[in-house]
Image (cartoon, rainbow, N blue to C red):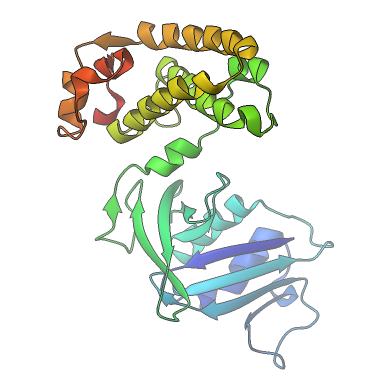
Length: 283
């Protein structure tokens, strides 16, 4: 089983073999920790190996860890990262299962995890910068701590009404309409379930959803009439959910939260004039 983690600069190698032995329930003599370029002085009999590579940027070490089939215990990547963070006293960055490669999960030395946004370096350098995180990360005192909108967008929310009307895998003729319906149904579900995953949603994301609703309005005009009535009925159903969970204030609150960036608000459709009962961007 393969594992890949990234660590910031620090003294880690004096405790790494012992920690790997603990993680995989093997003897220290059954492990090998070597530079990725080292080919001679390795423990070729090891059943747990770790190849490390030095990187530029905020994350100084890339570790590729392999456990052979005969190893008694195979922890998940999250379990391994948490143990490494605690034993080595450093945050450990590993992959996030939300499908965005620039977002990484961070195992914290004190326990628990957070998410961070990373960026690959340019100018022929190999490594990453850490741009922001959803919680403080030890060793990164100047890191921006903030909600990550792309994480909220990537959170999977089932859309049973849309799926029934326009099943997943629908062809190009209705594929775009399906995508817009999914976004509109998800907004209603987000509101009714307290804005998962963390009770937060930005005013900009809310604005995007209203823009998707406007695109849906115009897109339906191009749908053949025989199918259009069914989809318009679905939109009306989703609109009713939206109305139940919002209040009409003429759009003043949203306009204020977006610092007046919405132009000609009074000319925009009715859904632009409504506001969530409990605005999630102030959480």
